[in-house]
Structures are given as C-alpha cells and as structure tokens.
Image 1 (cartoon, rainbow, N blue to C red):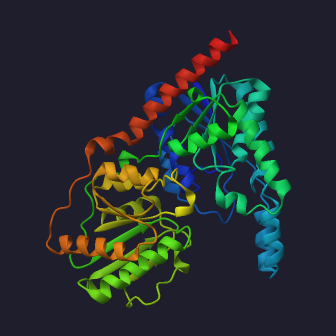
Image 2 (image 1 turned 180 degrees about the vertical axis):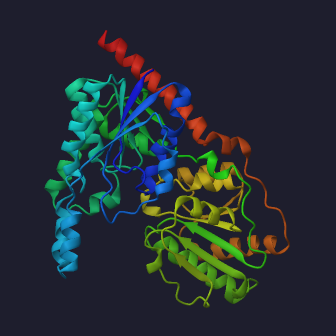
Image 3 (image 1 turned 30 degrees about the vertical axis):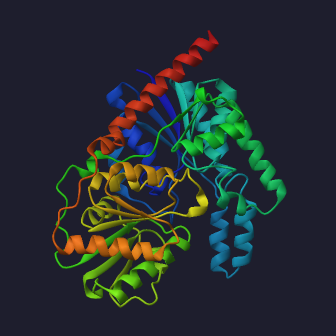
Amino acid sequence: MPRALFVIYDFPPATSSGVFRPLRLLRHLPEHGWDATVITARVSRGRRTDPALSDRIPESTRVIRTRAPEPRIAQLLLMRLGLGGAARWIDRWSRVPDPQRLWVGPATRAALAAIRAEPHDLVWTTSSPYSAHLVGLRLRRACGLPWIADFRDEWTTHPDVMALLPTAAHRRLHQRLEGEVLAEADHLTGVSKAFVDDLLRTAQRPPDGSSVIPNGFDEADFASDPPAPSPDRFVVCYPGMVYGRGPFETFLSGVRQAIERGPIPAERLRLEFIGHGNLSLSAPGLPEGVFVPRGQSPHDEATRSLRAASLLLLLADPERGPGLFPGKIFPFLASDIPVLALIRADSAAGQVLAEGGNADRVDPDDAAGVAEALVRRYRAWERRETPAKTDPEVVARYSSRTQTRHWVELFDRVRQACGNRSA
C-alpha cells in the first residue's frame, strides 16, 4: 500500500483554520488505498486546542510530533514584563520566512528518519506556515521523493505577509525561498485558480504542473439533523476570526440602518460572532443584546451554532484580491442556510456562492446593500418561508470524500510521472 508523508505544522488537537484542509484529506485517505505519516509540531502550552478533532485522525495514520521552538515564547515573556515594544520587534524580525523557521530542522530530521524506517512514495507539504515548504525542499534534495507543495494562501503576493516585513532584505529572502520552493516542487496546488496563477507567474512555470483543489466541508458535520432554530430571534452567525475592520464596520452600519429605518425590531435580532479574538469586538450604536461576541468554541459546538442560524455572514478583506477563498463558505453551502457575503464580485468565493444559489453578495463597502439584504431575509424569516436549497450538485463538489478522490488521483499521477522521469 502506498504511503504519503505529510508535513503539517498545525494538526489536532491544535485548532486553527489551517487544520481542517489536511485533516479532511487524511480522514478518507485509507478508503482509497493510501496510508500516511504526518510530521507535525508538538502542541505547546497556551495554544488553542480541540481534543475532539483528534478522533478524526485514522488509526492507520502515523503521527510524529517534533519540538517546535518559537520566538513567541520569548515574546509572551516580554509582554508579561511590560516590554511590548521588544516583543513586537522580535515578531517582525523573526519572519524568515515566519516564526516557525526553527521547526524546519527538527521536522526534517524526523521526516528523514521516518523515510529510512519505512518506504514512502510522496511528500505533501502545506502552508502556512511557509516553513513547512522548506522542510519539503530539504526532503526533495535529500531523497528525491515526489513532492506536492500545497498553498492555502499566497506567499510573496500576500499583502499582509509582505507588509509585516521590516526590511528590503527580508522581502528578498522571502522571494528567494519562494522561488526555490516553486522551482523544485514537482507539483503545485492551491485553493483557487487566482492563487495558482499567481504562483505560476512567480515561478514562470507552465500550468501542467499545477492543480486547483479548493477547500471543502466534512460530511460528518452535517450527518445529523440540525438543531432547532430560535423561534423568536433572527440569528445572524459569523463563525471565525474577523480579519480587517472594513467589511465588519460596513456590516454594522447596515445593521444600524435596518434597525433605525425598520422593519427589523432590535429585540428580534441577534448577531453571533464565534471565534478567537471576537470577545474584543464591539458594536457601538447597536441596542443592548443585539451584538453577542463569543470566544473560541470547539469545532462541533461552532458547527451546531452555524446550523441553528437564520442567516450566515461572510466578511472578506477586499484587499486580498480575487483569489480569496475562505474555507467557511463550504460548510455554509452544506448547511442550506441563506448567506450574506460582503465580498468582491470577482472573488472566487463569491462565484462559488453564486453557483450555490442561496447567497446575497454585497460589496464590502455597501452598507445600504447590507441593510436591504438583511431586511429581505428578515421578512422571509418572519413569514416562516422555507429558504431555497443550495444546489446539491455544487454542495457535492466540495464534500471531503469528493475532494479526497481528486487528491488521490493527483497523488497517483505525480508518483507515476516522477517514476517515469527517474526511469
């Protein structure tokens, strides 16, 4: 049975948005005749965890956890000592290419030991952090195994990443490291065509060595009946962190307009924001009890909240460009609940939501459009109208089983192509 070696920094019981893409793939991989070894980082004290996610790891998957020294340990200490400026200096200067750079050595040694102990047929690395690809680069040079480099986000074309770099030398280093990864990986994958096209332009590679495999959803999250929705509250749910204040402020402005001008009474509206960092959010100008920020919840609990909502909210940073593809849109599609998306018209996510047929898209700066969409959805909820179902063909396209089949087909192609090349 073929075996793939996965290099994944964030892995259960750690929880972050980056955990779910590889976990969905690994969960169904044995059904297609592949086994896996995962090289990951030990979960350090203070990191967010969700132990229930570990139950989704197949028994046949071998998980090897290595030490992962990070500058953030020193940063936290400095913050406690009141030396926030020094902590921020370390954060910016340690991005070479990211704070996980010191994990590359331990991860590479653990991966090489695993390859010596048992035959492996392929290496799969995923970013961010980009340091995972540096492990793949070392393994490619050391043992020549076929290598797929998977990008969940851009690298040097990511505006937030480059804005945090303190010097031109840092930017040149990122560009050099990205160039080496893109040149030596046997195959590049990304979550959207725009992301992959950017990678190919950067690397000046032909498209035949690349694939677009979007994020998706796990069918197990939607196998049971959904919880009963609130009978007397129109609940708008936003699961996840809020990135960037622009669309968030636009949404709040639209909510204020819908309440002030009618017909949405404040006592019948509830805005639930569930995710890390959301407890620090505020909504000035909204009546008490409307805005309900909640902190990080276990994945199963957050999914139940999502499925009990009247309307799901998507906020996307317009600066991220057309390739932006937030992973939360796929459970949105699977839930059959209407969606209000503050997102660019040319975005990959906006196009998928349009295909699903159950979403209202509004420009990220259009507060009046937000108010109009909210009022329309509220009136339909008040009349107890059954929302239109999301197109089942679109939903099926993004199920974890469907996508795992695409991954396995790619694994087989890359392995065969590299075998023919070496022969």
